[in-house]
Length: 523
Image (cartoon, rainbow, N blue to C red; front, top):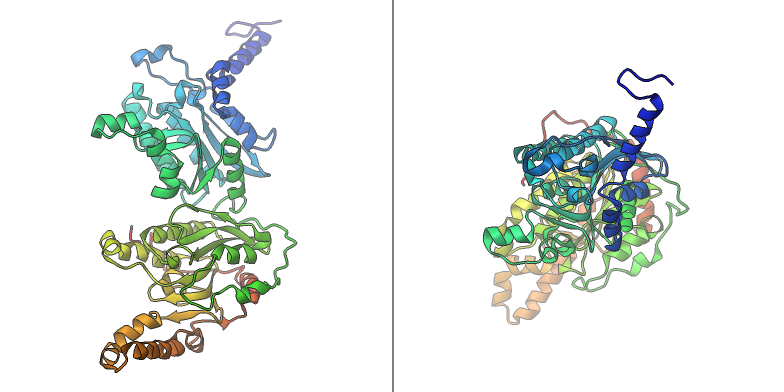
């Protein structure tokens, strides 16, 4: 057998390549992978194998290696630079992913780790394919100094440039601490593994060193910190497999990019189905709560609702469902929590969700039962006006089909914050139980008739009389319908039919606006 010009036979060179490739594919080592398994976690490559359709994944950058020599790094091997990147198919559609490998120098983020990640995001953007990152890293590779720092900038910029073009989802399957933690929160959605996913701007040791606070990793950076308190984790998963499954489910509602329509599927759930229980679901007492989830799950296809930020600002509800096979975004109040009022956190939650749907051509349906924006010094001083305005910007900027169903209360600024005709709704339908007014009757009577009530022989009787008078005149859907602000007052049982017919009409909705970079939304 003839030798190649550089020495060695062809067979020898191929054998050398196979040996080197096998070495890289074993990641940190079989022992390190076994340690992962003992903790109930998959390795990076096992996560990739589970996520992608069998045999479809193509890896990019297996052979990339760092160039650092300081602090003994010239003798440190970091297989694939601690991150597996590539593309394949998920449920038949192309997706790009990056899975950090904790077994390879704890998945630390160095110069070429960052280059691989940024390159994968740019590749996804250019191809118009969703990008998924599987975070599992001890943080910055401090050995590389400025080179590590600069690589964060490449990553962040690539994310921002891809934002709104392709869906980006981050899976917190291990630690994600330090500057690297900006990476997941800058993506469209974060899914956090309940027991093993951690995210924070600094770990407990660094926090203690810098500010003297002693706190555990779980309390500082665990799922409760972000799913309940900070509002940065959109979905909590039970473990690695559940994390990957929930990601697949979330992707199923999205188009591959902003130039495509979301994928419609077949359903046996009739678009004309009536829901008799809706005719009795609203309590006679307007102050009595009920469960909005019963309405949401009854009106959507087959009762399937993928909620986003379930544990955060639970006085508001948002999530994905399908109507006659079409993906839709659902936005709603929850009367059972704070009467469904819009406070600062609820406004932020809903505004971001509305904009996410709009970016990817997902129609929006609002189910309204809201007494207004939260008042009082705490909310005023914290900026309820600024945060409340985010909802107004989100609705007014949106170009997707917008459908509003007023179930019960729709008062004051919340009438616009929850979507009405003048802010941009294509269709507004109201139930006969709707109470649409500038304020509730009790508030209005206390202002308009304050003197009459005060000077009456029986103030309480006079107050009740004035409340009833105002309520009968204005706390009804008919005045708004008479002015054309409500398109129709419908039988509650017909809600699903009305929504589906509206979606049919709006299927080819197109909006042309004057050119601008973007609206100067309150942040």
